[in-house]
Length: 388
Image (cartoon, rainbow, N blue to C red; front, side, top):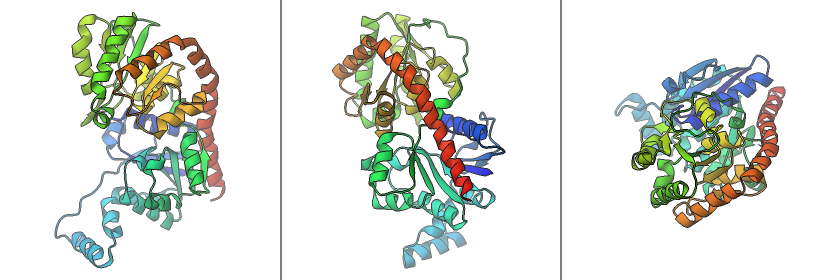
């Protein structure tokens, strides 16, 4: 069985890498002779994922002005208000692979959280026109993200796998019939433990991840995180390990975190992890932390899945839904509007420290069940094979 993963932007986002790496592993573990191929916006960054059967360039193509394609596109848009021809040309690097596979997995878990995407809708139409199975793999979608166009597009999927309960309930309430509940495949990802850096306290190091995305959404959060670092240094004896997880140009956690490192390195209790580790290596460090505070969802999944008490600087439904499925409520998740509230940040940190053992015990009980829910995605995928 041939499976094509698409809508992957590249593995400089270690969360995207974690999804591809772990999804491929669990699919191949449970489906005999499955072949998994990846179409990527930046295939050069994905060579580190060695269990794929092929990696293809999925970058958007441009339509040269005054070319035949440009003239046809312009005519169709002007006369018929029809963008399908132009969108087909732009996304040809994805579309050309559809006919050679059996199942197409849209793996961008939160792609639907970022506005309308007519190009993606066109690709989905092309998948169905070729008679292939179309599956949305491990998605998160909030009420604020929904639109009529998105809802129509979602109806075209043979299977929608929601990675947390809040998304599952929303989509079911919207009348979608093909929705099933699973958990993010990254909960099952392996870890690779590298030597600990100088300054790391075994059993007493806290990880801190912060991102330009959160900083942009709430510009006052930068100051509040600085106050939180001071609070941790003043009220504990822990080392803080600044932990990047997305290292893309223009969206680089390391650049944001390095400013904090420069400011606090003289304390000898603030260190920074390198910006060139893969997802399993970051998980190897995160798994040995005492606590973790993170803005990037898959950095927090690395912590949760290692039973490390975690505080989430959340910005979307996925953070809330994942926490709810683990703890039964939204435990230690701060919304985007809360992240600039330094009093709330400090209060939540103190709550995490106070309840350390309770949180660890709950994670140790819940995480095995969450990992089983990750594998449910493959069970639902196998059912689609049976229908072919």
